[in-house]
Amino acid sequence: MKKKILISSGGSGGHVIPAIAFYDHLKENFDAFLVLDKRGSSFINEKKYKYKIVKSPHLNFNFLNLPIILIKLLFSVFKSFFFLKKNKVDILLGTGGYMSFPICLAAKILNIKIYLFEPNMVIGRANKFLLRFCKKLFCYSDEIINFPKKHKDKIFVIDHILRKEIYDFNNSYKKEANDITNLLIVGGSQGAKFFDNNLKNSLVNISQKYKLKIYHQVSYSDFEDLKFFYKENGIESKLFNFEENIFKYISEANLAITRAGASTLSELAFLEVPLIAIPYKFATDNHQLQNAIYYEKNGCCWILKEEEFNQNKLTTLLLNIIQNKEDYLRKKNSLKKFGYQNNWNNINEKLTSCLNEN
Image (tube, rainbow, N blue to C red; front, side):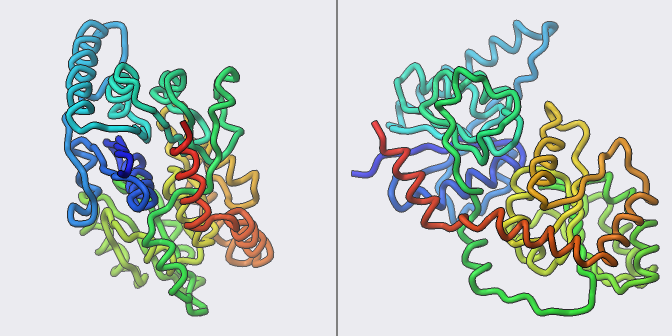
């Protein structure tokens, strides 16, 4: 009889997309299912995955509302306790965020084995607290900033976790060489208003010298305005909102402008698309900047800090990249080396072996 594993996620696509990838990896060897909040369920294909929706309060800790937060937390732990007991869960895998906190506490009370996942180069606050209860924490590097030294033995490094469709697509797809500069602009699962509003002048300047084709993930409110902008300036474009199969657009690009969320960076790295990272400056504990620095250290990207951003800097950088093919090819080659071990069977074996340990 297969062990039952619950993969807890919720909130943004940054938590849900890796949870889906874990589900794909584990469903053959475990009785796997997902638990999400209402927001998280919007990122999932209900026909492909076993999942349940659970209400969970967004816990923003501060001293002013501490009594209310504690009451909400206790109520969520209470609900999670009976949910886990009813579903006879053997293993809990938490992918971070506020959803993981109460359900992991309940799992500890029930003596259920707990595993955590941290895709960022800064450990999340929930994961940092929950380390004391978990067997192992899956992550991409043993150089995570602010990781407690006393829990270093719980680090379990894996290759970047990706959905099965990306592997299948990458094995079958062959990009045609052309002279068009195919540029992907992607701001995470919600799009990025900053990109919608602040890249226009640079794109027009570049399009006057080089033929561009833009794949732009757009926030819903700016869709029509940007559609008009590209048409008015004679720039070929494909606009989209959240796209489950975004890897199809990534594969068409030869350069990306992106935030520095872990899932997006992993997919760009795997499909060997060099990138300009503009980390979201309000990301918790500045984790996006640290993600970008990790990729920069490995020779895979250029960084423009949002607080130092202006369109002249972006235009200059884009022109340097387009004109300096050697630097571009070095980045592309670094991405190839960076992800060379990343294959489906390797990760499957490592995960299954770890989760089956007593």
